[in-house]
Image (cartoon, rainbow, N blue to C red):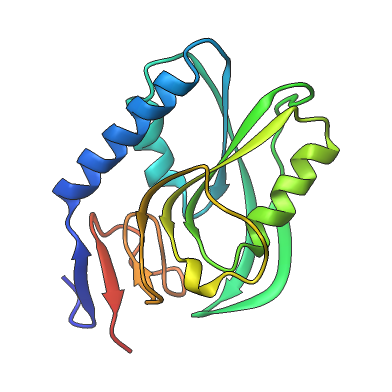
Length: 172
């Protein structure tokens, strides 16, 4: 464990919570198609675990969007890689590691609607409402956390710490 990272959520707890979320999505979408679009890079570990916990056929793809540099948001959402799925008339689940200011997910949600999505659901591993600057809420969430800078389980600090199997607070 890095010296400057304090464990907040251990890996055993994460596994249980993601399994519960997968079961909830399975129940809610048992009569509908499930289309998941993961927001790279942070969502990749959460999305891998989540799709295994959803007991339904799923379509999945990724989109790359970035609005952070270091520990602060730049305020600008840049899409670097786009999805290739046909989303017209479908329910899309945007899967993200953390819902923070909400700017990235708000922009991506509007993009999905402009492409003809019937509905867009927000699925996030962590929700940090204290930092919200736009009106957006998660439809599905594993944890709500206080305003702390966290890493692990896909979340990074300048591209480091994504590989930690727990959520930890960075002590700067």
